[in-house]
Length: 117
Image: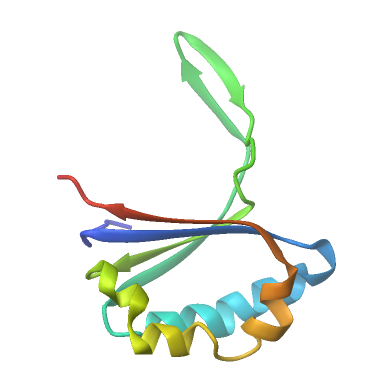
């Protein structure tokens, strides 16, 4: 996935085990399409954290996840103003997300990144 946008929102979170199936279903079938239709949202991609082993200083090391959330979505944005738009505010509250999913999320981490080069 080439990143062409000047801004990317990273939205990471964990979910309680009893709500995990609903979380993934709602995220894929409702939340991503709803937010992806907001003017200024260029793309949305979801990821699940996995084991990280990498070469550092000549050694292959296992890198512990620390408090990194299990699930992260990246939203390519035209501008930061997308996140405070009426359309975003409406889309974030649609469907089952507010009542059936949000109460079961924890360790939420949101970061707005600006492209440097």
